[in-house]
Structure formats: structure tokens, C-alpha cells
Length: 175
Image 1 (spheres, one colour):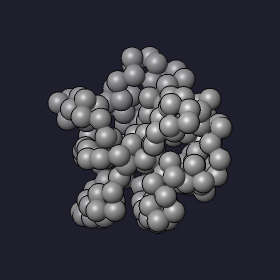
Image 2 (cartoon, helix red, strand yellow):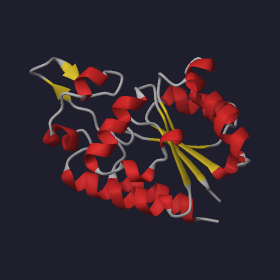
Image 3 (cartoon, helix red, strand yellow):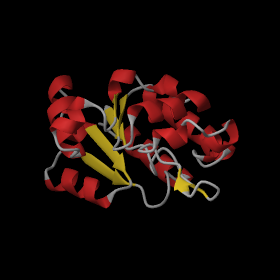
Image 4 (tube, helix red, strand yellow):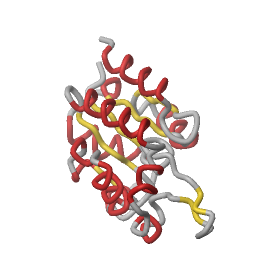
């Protein structure tokens, strides 16, 4: 049974978009861009109001019986800024968010599977089959699969779809 869920951020929880007037994507490895987003752009970065409401419900359900983490190549400061501005920060303990400025991620050369094993699993006592890692990056998912780090789920497009959220809820509720 899944007890711990680890999300990537950009294109997994969020749905970055291109700001044509600034010629830049709204991804969290660009904190200077994230800080300039207005309220509507922040909502759009989560796929709009309907998807944001679905994410809120999804995270609420998952947080009832799971510890939730974010492991991202984006900056923790930018991730927190976005989560706080749309009301999703309440689902994440700040110590459970790892971004590229975090020493733990730097020490493992930004290999998420290694951070999951060395930091999250080793300190929590979770078994690998109790941990679910969700990411849009095939390379991050592949490393976790090949090393049998944990259960994996690859996001197919730009951010978790409604169907993917439902499939994850089913996966987490199965015994």
C-alpha cells in the first residue's frame, strides 16, 4: 500500500506555459519569472481554475493517508511561491520540498531516484513498494524504475490530467 507520494513540480503538478511577451516559459528554474506572475498567470500555471480545483481535491484526498513530497529541479523558493499563491501549500511540509538549491539534491547530482532512496526512504522507514514517484520526465522515471527505487508513474503531457489524478487515487487506495 502506498504511504508516501513524491511529486515532480513543473509539468507534473504545474502546467507551465509560454509567456510570449517575455519569451520565457513559466517554470520554477526561473524564479525571477515566477515572482513577476500576476494572480491569473499563477492560476494558469496550474492549468486554470478547473484543474486547480481538481488538484486541490486530489491533494486533499492523498494527504489524508500519505506523506507528500516534492522533488524538483526547479527552485524551492519559486515552488513555494506558486503553491502559496494558489492555496496548495497547505498540503506540503516545507521540509518535504526539495529544489535545486537544496543541499540534499545537490549531493546526489540532481538524481531524483538517489535522493528518494538516500533521504526520503532511508529516514522514514518506508519500503520501496510504499513510495510512489510521479514525474513527467522519462529519464527520472527510468532511473527510479531501473534501480527499483519505488513505484513510478509517468505523467504523459504538460501536468497531471484529470484521468491521471483518478488513476493515482485508485493506485493509492488499492491494498
